[in-house]
Image 1 (cartoon, helix red, strand yellow):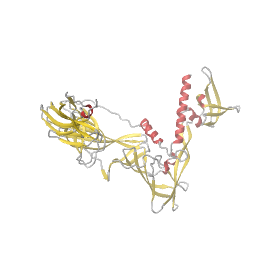
Image 2 (cartoon, rainbow, N blue to C red; image 1 turned 180 degrees about the horizontal axis):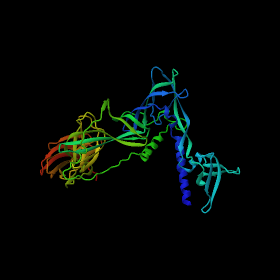
Image 3 (cartoon, rainbow, N blue to C red; image 1 turned 135 degrees about the vertical axis):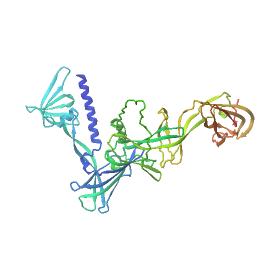
Image 4 (cartoon, rainbow, N blue to C red; image 1 turned 30 degrees about the vertical axis):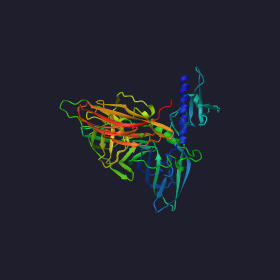
Amino acid sequence: MQKIKLSIKIIFMKTTCMLLLSILLIDFSGVSQNKLPMKKISLFKNSTCLVSKEGQLKSKDGKFVLPIPSTALYGTYWIGSAKENMLKSVIFKSDTLKTSTKAKYIDQLIRANVGKDAVLILQTGEKTDKSISGKILAYIPESGLVKIKDDNGKITFISYLKVEYITFSTDNSEYTNDSIARTATLKFEKNSESVSLQEYYLQQGMTWIPSYFLKIQNEKEARLEMKATIENYAEEISDVETEVVVGSPQLYYGLLLDPISYDYMAQPTSTTRSQFDRNDNYMLSNAMQQVQTTGGYAAGDQAPAYFEANYETEGEKNNDLYYYNLGKISLPKNSKGIFPVFSSVLGYKDIYKADISDKVNFASTMYCNSNDDYCDVFHSIELKNFTNFPFTTAPVMVLTDKGQFMAQDQFKYTPTGAVSIIKLSKAIDVVMKNNEEEVSRIENFKKIGKTTYHKVLLKGTITIENLQPKQVIIDIVKHVNGNVTNDGASKVKKQKSYNSVNPYSDLNWQVTLNSGEKKTLSYEYEVLFAPYPY
């Protein structure tokens, strides 16, 4: 019996939450017939989208009424009318709408059967049950009290939490619920039965998430495919022209809501609803995937060629933004969908990179450890964008030509004609060591201000060995805090330091190694240091 009590309390809590949400959230079901048809949406990666609606709006009871978008961003809500009948004003207000809802909980069943005869079985203790029969006169949502009149005319108020189950003579589970809808009433220069309108607004609640799939085809070519995962937790999309946008438009006011989207009496500057929608989207998403596998292939059968078709989605560059046109799509509210965008075969080349830090930092430590330090060499691939459209920043999964996993990395924004690098893994068959030693020093070399500095000359060596069965080209960068005097045929970049007398220097080599080949690079640099006073 205790379990039954607990379940009823849980139902009450859930029901209360649902009732609050039905009051707080905007429900357009009562004015759906006056919605303008959605013509086009443009989705950005920052969880915003531009919605364009266009069509004929018919008058109802002599008025032109439109629902108000719940998350339109500041300054982005605009309505335009045909010049034959100019729009004069738009008045925003809140209306209480009656909506019919299917009852799911005990209190909702009671509300659906007000005025009907019923038998309420009540739980009054662990061992004793009691029933009340009569006509349900009313239900008070604020307190959860049920008003019932028995055959003797006696009126009883009882909390629905005490009800274990109910018996009715007729089956009725539809109840009327109040919901708050904020609407816009439009006034025009001329009286008319219908008007031609266009509506724009930028809103939260829709976004697209790009991702890439890169499959190596041979030693020179790889197939790159991009898909767009679209999340919709704003409003219904039904056969609407859809664009996904590469680029970052300026949003000076951020996600601040436009005054038309919030109730100035209760919600002057709040944007918390967007966070609710965001979390609710993941919980309620009905986008599910089902993978089916078939049996193996008999000897001599040809397996289907997967991930080989190349295609392009029509796109357009407009200033600093690029628009991919996905065509007309349908996506219910609180759902997600995946849409292919493009696939192209690109040339690539293997590259190897090593970034070696200043392990000595003599100006601070005044000590040089001459032991060999092993350095990581990373294997990457370099892709050049030969397409007519940019690559946007997104995750990328890399597979070999045999379908073996190689890496997951970040594919960064790459305009047409530019090069992008995808890091694969550490190159375990390329061995690199770095060693430094002190060659000489001059004490009391220079006085700067009140500080006297000594000077030390350091010599370094980098040893690289290629144990792979193929030739490799390695890009090596060595960082030192000092002034390079002998760069060993490397390129040196020097940057002044504002908190040290020594500059930051980067030495860069491009080294080609055949299979089994070993090379040694050398360099020298000077460091000024102030000894600790004894």
